[in-house]
Image (cartoon, rainbow, N blue to C red):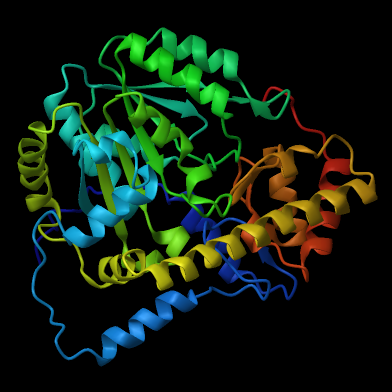
Length: 412
């Protein structure tokens, strides 16, 4: 047998969050806890199929008129139109003036990649700014979309475990005209630290003044606070100020449709005549990547968003999920406070969304894993949904132990 064409291929570095899950599954301890993966869990620690989603799936299963024909390249129009309204609201000037469009993509990741490919071809600048820290996939997406450089702007201030707004503004003000700026619409991943509305206003002013292009990562709309308007406030404000923007939407978290890969690229422009040309170019990009998006999940979302009764049920579901996350934040904070765990822990309740940037260092994280069988990212990021009323005491005790007994280099 001849030598393989691929004998030279080296193993890639494992994707950290999936490796963490693999390590967790291999652990035989009866008290193990996985705080790594970013997916909602009930207080019993299991996935939740939203009742509105279940109802629509049952209706679809009984509907003999449905088939499995291809969708258009741009996807299911009733889905993408409704998706844009989720983040902009029905009365946003951009919608009323017909300056918006949506393009179905493979969840948030696909929407960002689709937008990144378009921008790399049609902006004069192929420079993008991402916050430090940010969702790790941002780097790979823009590099693979042929952006010449991925730069960073300050966001997290380790000393205060809060937003470094001054550093953020300084870095954005220094960005060259035409650069793309990635902004987390809400529930910043991984820190859980968001801008206030006043800070968003200042950010919009600088971006508009510097002639930068805002690209929102909107993966947690509704899921963060339980309020669609609050979670999408920044996007709505930018659009209302006449700013052009992209927003990558995911319906994995707020609909619990993780494996259906339901996403949308929302586009806001100043010239309605541009929309058809932009759509044609997006189709040109999507065609060789995935050709046509999947129908099942998009049909579920479209049905719920476009039916007033189901829409209201869904809004109650996202309130329920967000409230459970807030409850877990409060419980963990109170347990650490009662234990007298060294340091301050108010940042846990000050943050919002699925994740908390705990401030734990790499040695402490490793000890959590090896000594206590509690798994979290090396950055100290934990998934608040993975905490339950049954395991929060154990997790708090484990954190207390590693913080009390292991000193970390403050520069890390």
